[in-house]
Image 1: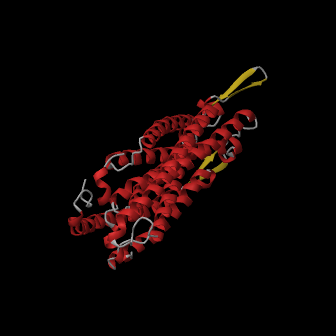
Image 2: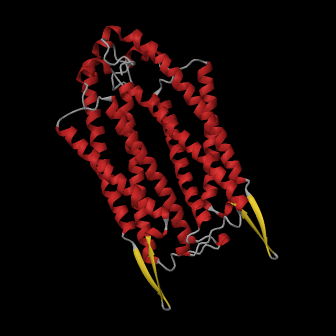
Image 3: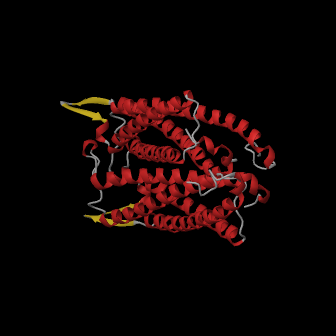
Length: 204
Length: 204
């Protein structure tokens, strides 16, 4: 438990601490970069899968067309994933620039901005998946008590593609959740202070 | 920005740091306790409002009854808020015990457990509100493209009570989001290490 210098006698702290901090920092930053790339890619895929999804059915002489704008939750999903992907692209560029320049995030205001952005993206993404999943359940199973009929019998291809989009969006939201933990770590460890002085009282 | 001892010369750190840490610790713990109480209370109210909601309508000779189990999203909302309220009650007891005994959370495993629990509750709560809000929109406005009719014209009292329940659940989810930030702060500051040694290189 003492790999960050906690519990080490004050005289040895600086060298021990900085070596381990570098290793952890590198791992955290690589994980952050990979996650942001995954989010960007999958966000675009989710938005594209749902946003381009249409199916036309001819019932006798009437043509009926299903499209994602028929369900507000799918519109929300497309917009949310578009925003998350764009935000992640900006963050990927920031990560790459800071890795190339070898900089370490030690500025609290910037850490707060990144933390807040990541939190908002995570919750928006989770809420969008929740709402879209609920709509998908209605579309797939219907709601007989309310006379809402299932529509996936009729628009099978449309429903399958929406399902793939929601699955992709689910992976995006799980990644944003992990990422928001990483940015919380990056922010709040700046508030760590001088734990080696008080670690003799390790209790809660 | 230096109220936690960051940027203060190492010789002055221990006293300055521990005094300020106590003040911040007390505020954080009071905020945590208040939020957990709010979540517990509002969670019970949300679950009760939605869970006890029924309305019977007589159309000619047929009796039709609306209840929350007609919509899976409302069942999810009731269960989620019940779990969040129960979890918060346990955490309130933990907070009170640790405040009475004057203990400070310095144990990483316990901080990790609390952080993980709070994160799960926050995302479950947000997802439940997202799904329930989507269902409420369908019930209120219908979805004419899919021949899903609005049901709130018929079950007005039922819909109003569900709306109050969702509003309460929304406050619960906002509180859990703030709380998950507090527990992230409590956890990750334990990983702070010896920031006063490296603060001369404040950059990112």
